[in-house]
Length: 324
Image 1 (cartoon, rainbow, N blue to C red):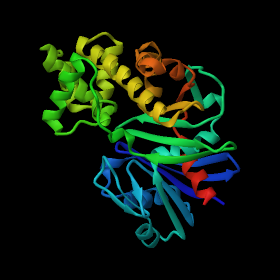
Image 2: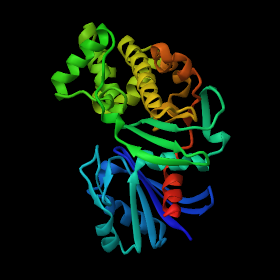
Image 3: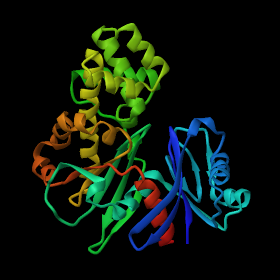
Image 4: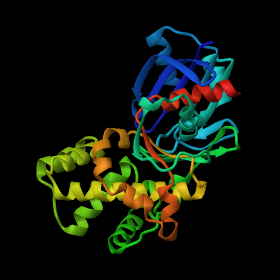
């Protein structure tokens, strides 16, 4: 049986058809749509069904936001989703909603060695695992190991309080507190966070980017422009922005790994890590990850890998639906 699966993010929504057999998932007819161009997920689903001409009785949608009682308010989109309402409006026999990072965690079982890039080998042991994903926002999920298999579960850890550790980070916290009132990890470790770091460093250092670059940041995908300028050594502030971003990403991934006792592995999802893999390898990410004082030896025992398979959340949504 084929089912419709979706990965709904603040920037894009991916849809596809999935067929599962145990931990194997076959995807076909995948499409991507700019999320902000549509008033609701229902509109995108209808467009997809028109574009492909397919029909499905069941669907599972991975949402960038908390899911409670078959409902979700997307965190970085003005969308309210209700599985019961979608069933009636779109004619599905069943609709499942789950957090997008929970879906990614489910999808790990379907990934092969070619779908992962190793940052740190750690020790090969069974145990709890976690996923930390910087994209438009910051998502986190856990996988509890019961002795035989993993049980994925959602968290909203990306919205926990950001804690500064040095003079520069204290100034960053004060800058963002004035801007947002409360400062979460998502404000610094995400695509939105890259822009926040850039704005802070520009003001703190008193250095302006060249006008063409500044215009590109203001009018385009700011995170992508800043990352590209950093790679080209075209802007000192952009370079410092990405250096700080990767170090903070490592810090928060380490925080999540500590809380989950993730000896079974730490997996980096989202779009930023795979798109900037070489820069990530050269960065201070692992320095931030290992920097846990007396528990550094424990951190070094944890394998760290990047998920380079962009369809992992779609695969996970299919496996989640099959498990139901």
